[in-house]
Image (cartoon, rainbow, N blue to C red; front, side, top):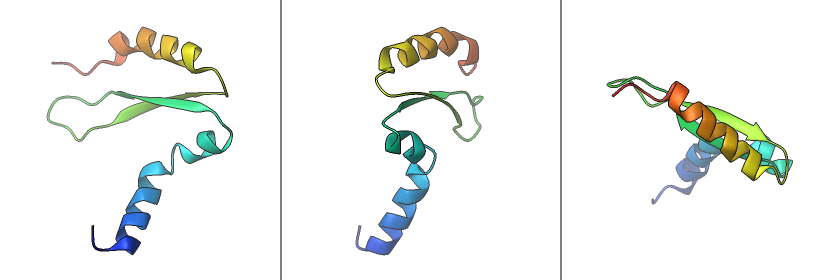
Length: 70
């Protein structure tokens, strides 16, 4: 909280995968696909501007296929 440089450097790393789609006014969603006791990993799906509903439909369809095992 006290180190602005660290905050902005970390924030840029967290946003690097979605920033291109944000710049193009697109949308993205991340679906968890890691196994139990592994580091969290997500499959990012993206679509163009104003395609949120189609992207969410695709994510719902894929969710049960890539859902991490319990």
